Length: 329
Image (cartoon, rainbow, N blue to C red; front, side, top):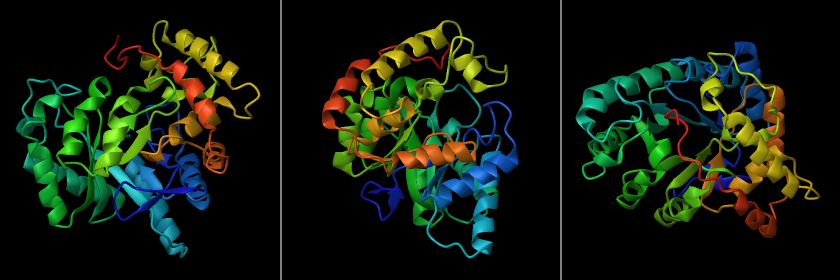
């Protein structure tokens, strides 16, 4: 497992991390024993960065991670395991409306109470990284929630502070990075969604902000495993994400990428991760992992040679300006 600096901070991360949404729920049936085995296997293979959130099964994902950390500590397995989690805004529009007030969605009382809940679920009194789980550009002029988080950081309750970008306006974090409000940013960046390369990633690198890449497989479309016959359960997040004609459109474009990979030695999922890791601003990519086989496949990508620059550039042509699907378009 190769490692990278986590921005300008005193932590060296495995370049492949563990995305823990699916083990919490919303991605079809998931058995806890499979989740626990996947976590252990990933850690055994060198992963030291785990990403979760309050909303991943209403704390289920966090509690599974806490169980694995307890089991490993009891077995005498040492080594720093960095856990990042997220707190959502108080109930309301997702993402927040430009007319929302920050003090209503991320008040000090709410943030302190939510922090206590995150710590309880994870079995700790201090979080390595707390990320706000979405944002609105309207709050950039007076980012009060980050002022509160900096105070919690000074109190020793939080190590680092971050933001998981709103899908429709990822560039809203640029002013926050330049203003020194965030230590890490979690961003969607993949072979289809290449917009962060225009400015966001370069600004992060210049400001020493760690970049955590989510959705590297575009919710599975870039694994190459979907076909026209693929169906998702009604309670599976992907049923809405790939609704209407979205799935066949994704399959067509994924097939075009696979054509460009002929003779390169890369499978589509390997290329999806290697292409993301080719950008020097990226600290860690967090593919979703829900079983041992996925842990082994994703971690093995780190040991492959770096993607040749010529191939990186060739794959730029798959940038897809499709708009934002999360809102139902």
